Length: 288
Image 1 (cartoon, rainbow, N blue to C red):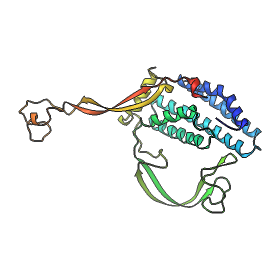
Image 2: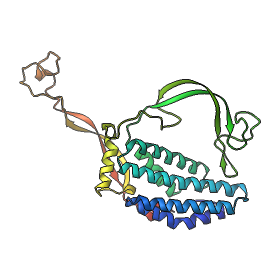
Image 3: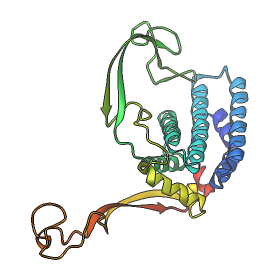
């Protein structure tokens, strides 16, 4: 997964803890998951201090490994919230995990391995279970964006850094200073941040798909790593508005037509149907 010997060595040493984490998560042992994450983060902290004077490639790969561990932490919180049926907050952890995984992919020297592919595929399929398809987008005017590394205005030539790039193991980003005004609030389909959503009650019907997944897992009919994909289709379902009438009676829909000429064939209608498809996964194969 890494090309520098220093970080690859630490990753190899971390594999037993990562596999324990995956095993505990698959069995919903979230406290034990957190203990493994704490151990991984502690080992990273020690290693980064040891190699703090290393060349940039090593420091940047430490950043990638750190983001991978952060992704595992968010992944743990995501499933814990799903099991607790706290679906609104689980969405935020899902977006955290996706953001962290995107950074791992962007900066990893070997970003096509099966570890990344497994998490990416599953997280994107999980995203489809949620009801969100429009998002809030806020436009603001600020005085300047300060570079997170050098402190200069990141949008000027005085700053040598580029947003979203790594420098000595740090990512450059802009810190907003002095918000002058809020320009607008809009509803969009492709936001910069998918956490800006219309809030639904966790018990609401909007979460029926992710709630069904939660019930499958808590009743031991599915384990988290065996969640594979969704298959969408149409299926004949009972029309709850249908009313049986005499053939020559006025139709219940109010059209003024006879029942036999109007809604007699609408006792069943095409409805949206989703199948949750299991994909048996060997934990040993996730971490390469």
